[in-house]
Structure formats: C-alpha cells, structure tokens
Length: 436
Image (cartoon, rainbow, N blue to C red; front, side, top):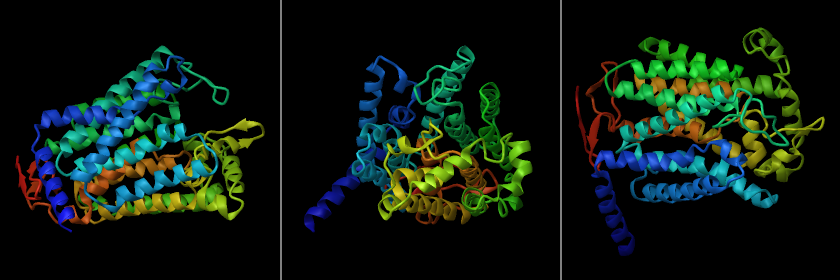
C-alpha cells in the first residue's frame, strides 16, 4: 500500500509540473501529437515510403505520450475505456482471423490515442487542445482543397478503388473528417473569445462548401448544411430543449433500425431521391448492408466480427467494397458485438453528458457537431480520430464530475463555463475563471 501511495504522490507532483507548463509550449507539443492522428491517405499510395515510415513512428511516439499523459493527468472517465475497448476488440478480431495488423495501426489505433489525449488535456489545456486541432485540420484542409483544384480527376487509384474522387487527405466522401472538427474548433474558440460567430469561422465554412461543391459528396453536403441550420437554431435557448444530444442519438438509432434493418426507406423516398440525389438503394448501399448481414453466420463472427481485413470478403457482383457503409454495421464487421456495445456506450455517455448541460450554448454546439456525424453514419462509417475527438471533447467537458465544478460565472452571457474555459485550473482542481 505504501508503494502505491508513494507512486500516487509522485504522479501528483509530475502532473502539477505538467499543468504549470507554459501554454505556448503546450500548444506546440499538442500540435506535434495531433499531426500523426490525422494521416493523409495519400501516404498509403506513394512509392517512396519515407513519409509513410515517418508517420508510423511519429504516431507511435504520439501514442506513448498520450498514454503517459493519461496516466499522469487523465480524467479516468468511462469514455476513454470504451474507446480502448472498441479499438482493442478490433485488434483481437484481427489476430483471430489472420488480418493485417498494420492496417489496424493506421486506421484504428489513432482513435484510441485521440481519446486518451483528450482525456488527458481537456481539463487543464482545453484552449490549447482546441487550437492545436484547428491548426492541424485547417492546414490539411487547405492542402486537400489545393489537391482538388490541381488534380480534379483525383490523385491515386488502386485495384479496388478508382482514381476519381481520391485526393490528398482521402476520398471526397471523407472530407467531413477534416471539415467538421475544423469548423467545431473554430466555433468553440469563438465562444471562448466571447463571440457567437467570428470571421474565421465564416471563412472556413465558405472553404468547406467550396470543397464539397468542387468534389461533390451529397451526404457530406447534407450533413454540413444541417450542421449550419441547427447551429443557428441552438443560439436560442428554447431550441436547445428540443434539438439536443438525446434527440440526435435517438434519430440516429431509429434511422438505423428503420432504414438499414427494416428497409422502410420508401417512407423517406422524397428525401433520398430529391435531397440526397440517390436512388432507393442509396446508390447500392442496401446491397452492401445485405451482404454484411449475411457475413454474420455463426456465433464466432457475430461476437468478434472479422477484424480489419474482413472487408476483403465484402464483394458484390465481383465488385469489392472497403467498408460496410454504415456506422454500426462497419464497427460490427471489424470488431463484432463487443465493439458495437463499446460504441453504443460511448454514444450514450456523450449524449447524457451533453443533455444534462443542454441549456449551455457550448454544449448545444457540441451536440450539433456530434449529430452531424450521425447523418454521415447512416451511409458511411464514422469511427475515426475526427469523430472521437469531437465526442471525447463533448464528454470530458460536460461529464458529471467536471460539471459539478463549473463556476457560476457567466460564459458568453448564455451559459456557464466548464472548468477549463478561459480560466486557470490548478492541478488540485481549484478554478480561477478569467471573466471578460
């Protein structure tokens, strides 16, 4: 017991020293830790492996640092553990079914690292965390937008994927992975600076629409537009009681049951055809969902899925697909029932945390951002560092233990500031808010 007590005391001292670091130094460090977590997919399709190896080892260093910070500073909330369980279950399934572990390192491990990083820094270095993600995603988006202009027909192709639509960061359907955290971070900074909407956010929104116009993605365009609409609506306090985190999660789950499982999309035909500009099969996605359901024969695959290489068996009429085209089905395909339970646990935690603070403008904005991912999730997988960042920030800003420490000092005259917002937070938990 003395050993554990001494170790705990030592960790407290180390944590206090880290929390007292110069914020500019912290910002630089966080930028360096975040960069490898948003990996441009172009790296997987270049002959020179120099940058590939650089990102690989950079990502491993980021993971070690995030784990160390989590042990020393981390808010030991259930969200981070669910994230680790989700990613870990995919790894177990990958080993069980002889999958390609290197693919897990590239596409799944960064999500767990992001969850640990946010859990470690959201309390004491919230502004620096938000700025670091804003910087990284903005730079990557500018580079991705440039690739759209310079290479309108795409930059790379494989034997499974055509060149059209594949740009610097990823396929055009995945542009939201940069756009959503970029816009959210800009909006959060506006709030911390006492603004509802700043010029920077408006410019980044214009860039986002330009990206989706030049490299069209109907689902992303709808999700972005809904994000903007609901962002405007939740500026009014009364609207926050209706358009909240539980509402968005409920709609997402019900949509999955009605559309993906029960196939009642005929009821939404006007929306699918006239708004999304897809046919009643969601451009062939219903066939992919059917094929995915058929893969879960036997208790073994139902519980553990197929691992990261399971997509190789997802072939329809000779055409291969790289994922199940749905947020829940894709997690089930990769990690089985255990992974789906972990994902649902994360979503429920985030929704409850935000719902209990639904009158806060910032919590409402975070709920809208999470809801935008649900729109994408109906026809695309969403588990990535992008989504995990947004969801984990939402949880660790507004989970019960931190919400109890919120000061009564007004925040933007419409909500109360969580413990890290525009204030100094001592490592021992005391708060000194800097009022405007």
